[in-house]
Image (cartoon, rainbow, N blue to C red):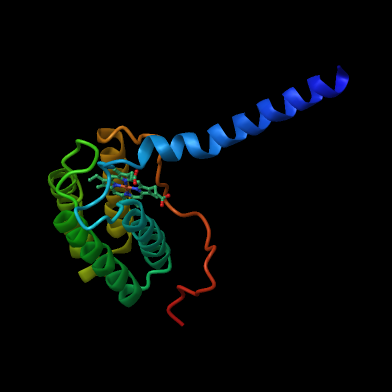
Length: 161
Ligand code: HEC
């Protein structure tokens, strides 16, 4: 009797595990809306954006103009790709939203960097990060909150010398 109860518990927990592992996969695998026609996902691009936004912030804090220019260019290139590859995602107009939210945040940053005006660059950077988050709110991913960096986790120095 005891043995049977144990077996039943074991089977139930195996089934639950299988459901936990396979259930969500099964649910999302057919005809996902969050991929390009070529089958690409948006998240890896966002990952690049996050990393380069972080490094741009550290470059600005270190008043490192070549590094800041480099990361702002990288960000713009990634956004260009996103706008080309993801006209829509999960019913949201990713390209249009990105053009409406990120593109207007860039000129102030470009101008401040060109003038090496670091206090203004820092303010423009805050607005750029806010634009990331505004889009996350617009696409119901408000739980993804990008912040202004407070430390350097990279094996990379942003110092000018
Ligand atoms: C056009 C709207 C939009 C803009 C602008 C945008 N995001 Fe996203 N972001 C999304 C969507 C949609 C997802 C969810 C992607 C998914 O589910 O695959 C996401 C997910 C993410 C994630 C989670 C994925 C991960 O790798 O952890 C991060 C981080 C992220 N975005 C960073 C950024 C940063 C940094 C910026 C600004 C430089 C930015 N995003 C700008 C729409 C946007």
